[in-house]
Length: 86
Image 1: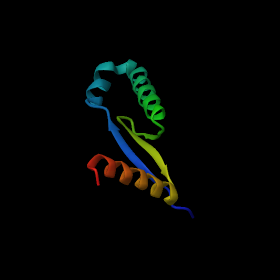
Image 2: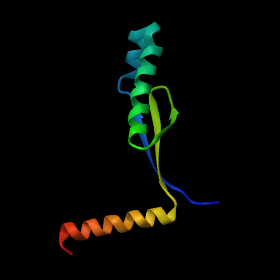
Image 3: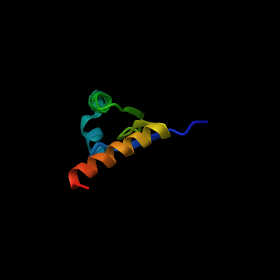
Image 4: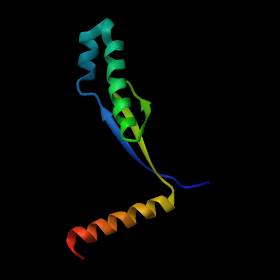
């Protein structure tokens, strides 16, 4: 197998239970609207929504393999050296 690195994010919808009680029949419209916003923004920033857990979303941004990670480390190191004058 090949090791792949990724960042994981978790987004929780605040007061979701209260919203479901108040919205009753309109809850699916609300959930779909929230899902569309979350999916669009995560995709816009190069990630994917891996799982919708009702009141929360699990998001993933794939970084790449070990070679890609090493490239990122090099870029970060050079940027740090430029900013600190090292």
